[in-house]
Length: 169
Image 1 (tube, helix red, strand yellow):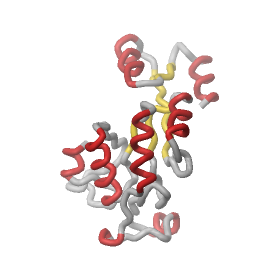
Image 2: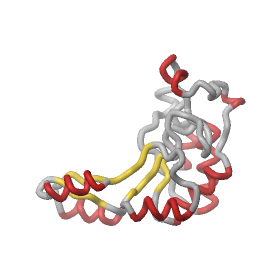
Image 3: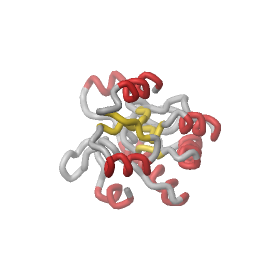
């Protein structure tokens, strides 16, 4: 994070770091610079309490993809077809009926992140985990975010969102 901040500072004629959504809006309206937003893809072991979420917010992190490539303490990862994905996440189930969903810690992490002003990215979650996460978000008035998933009617694979998910996002 410090490296990127220093890079933007040293090249301020071209780059700026936004630390919250309002800064992004302001920079979009007032500059032609590339806007850098700090995010973390794969929150495994990072969010165990409100204090952890507050720490990452203080670093300027705007959003976190809690689950990335492997099942973890927050819930289940979507497994793409093919041998490489299976080798990365050998214990995960490819059968929807056996998917693990969002864990209690995963639900708490979403709320803690929101309390700290950090959005949770539902990208890489398996169907059950994503549905559980969207339910938690709806119950707590937390806006969901999906940054790089597919859309099942076009790309029918486990990481794609179905129509119902899109309407909830």
